[in-house]
Length: 342
Image 1 (cartoon, rainbow, N blue to C red):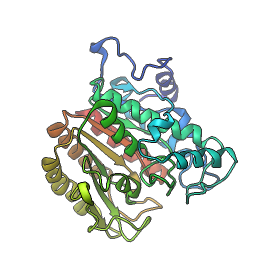
Image 2: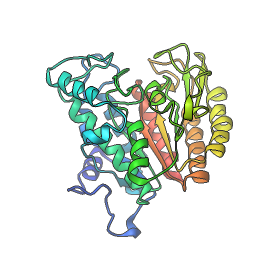
Image 3: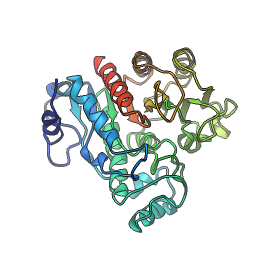
């Protein structure tokens, strides 16, 4: 078992601006990359908030207990530029975020996202770290990556922060993969208990990004009806599965196994991405789904199979929700084990 000292040693192993450790020698390359950095603990929405810094501690404990550190590539953290964030978000919204945080506000003026004095510092590094993970995977330095970032992102709309989210990490990363690396098609799946409305809004009329979500309904944020399937060039590129409270393996794993696989066969993505929200696990205080750790292993395997069939194995998983600390720790552990096993 790895110790916390081992984790910190791993986090600090490679200084400088290199994105992935051990790039110099291809023999040292490892198939799975991990983005984990203590900066993600610094986002503090306030006492009693579910999106608490202790979530970072829970994820770190999962990694400590996994024994996987020697098998993982390190993804470096960096600051995302305004131009990169503007791949999805409007310039006025970016300025609003900066202004609200600089003014010491406790909530973004655009909506229901609580913030602290260091939230901007963390949020731009969450985006930048995920972009580095995309570089690593698309560039062949790792086959897949798990990004243990805070704050989450999938509720952030182009001009509005929502639901604990400031910038939409995964949506920006998908667009970055297209613009920076020339990928034509990206598929994003979202198993968070809450609908990823910000991701859907970003690509609803696009056609080059396929978005699929399983989520509890009715539940926050109130979007994600089955009838929402895209518009214009994006018609047919949004696939929603709203399930009632109490849904579990049969509904959610079934949707991924049957419907997402079939959609991937038709869409043929060049990169597969995952909004990995673990608030769909049984016992989470903010959801009423019944997924188990075994279910998350099987869901991860399905995502890996889709990536292997259509995207040369390229898969980037990005942490979203998960608010039971013990549940988050357990689910992240098995998810990472499943990612690293292939």
